[in-house]
Length: 243
Figure 1 (cartoon, rainbow, N blue to C red):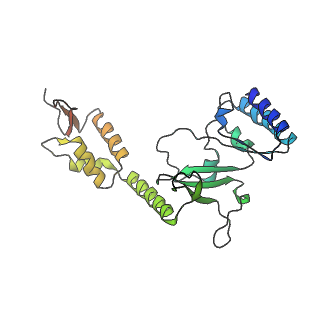
Figure 2 (spheres, rainbow, N blue to C red; figure 1 turned 135 degrees about the vertical axis):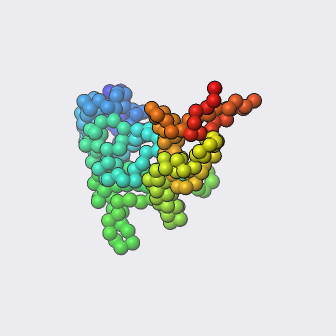
Figure 3 (tube, one colour; figure 1 turned 90 degrees about the horizontal axis):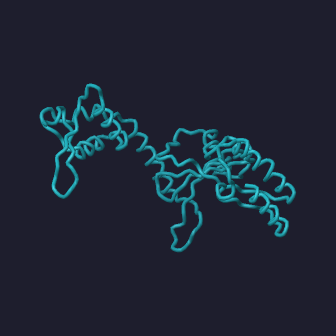
């Protein structure tokens, strides 16, 4: 950590500049990101004096925790402000924060001006302040840059988000109850496909099946049938598998 600070000071002494970019923070910060005391020492006692001494601004890039299927649809600006991995000191220290959040469309991202977002200068067609814009990775061959997302991509991202939210709201348990036959097993993948076709999300279906099969007094049972040269066939039934 101290080496990074001293290196930055030396570089700015020999090569003055107006703007420094640290990308990502983890490549230069050699301590636990959750340690508020160490993080504050790095930011306030380390970086700040150097930036002031050299009259230099800083863009610091930082990552969010690696959370699978993170749903940010109901997040507020405050939630996004503290979405980076580690201690809240990072958010408290920063003068402004711009968050890049993935959408349901690969390569299309939502940019949210959260902390001091009113100063970013974004304006809509009515000359009103904007705090959210959509950008995408360039689709031109051999070109790496951000470009304005097309209206079609923005609309598609919004529609997919709504569809996922709607699917997550469908309770799969009553659907499972209605589809599993009374007197015969049904193949597990077929059951999942049928329930999914009625609007329930795949994740919620699998979670519901796991819960139902683990009940103290289970209503459903998983049967397994061995097959040669391939995986077992898995079925769901209302009765235990015969020994």
